[in-house]
Length: 128
Image (cartoon, rainbow, N blue to C red; front, side, top):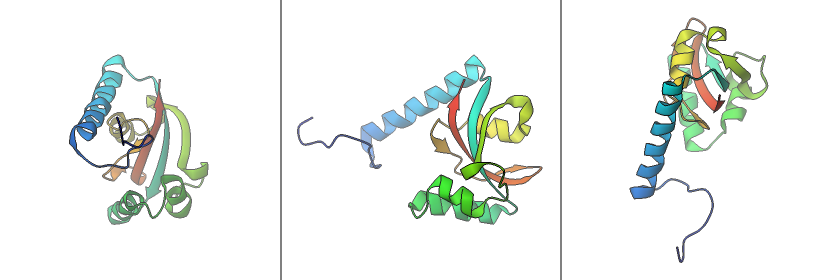
């Protein structure tokens, strides 16, 4: 590993990126197979699909972090920085829950998720 920097990888490609993506997909598949009881989630809720897509691009670009974007843009001001906390399936909209199952821990949806409340960007922090 001579000459390599340690720490978080800022992207890139190649085998390391492919391995990370494969590991994330496996973790999601494993959690679905085991039956997730609860997830710790954050979200950003807006009225329009276009606004949600715009916020996703802002977060992806690094101009703003997820928590900051939640404070700035989310219609749901109940949770700090979009935090909903630990939620079980009956506590969430079924479309929200289904979308959250597909998100690796520490990541967020890359497409807006429509529910009866509007459009969400969902971040999954942990599962149990």
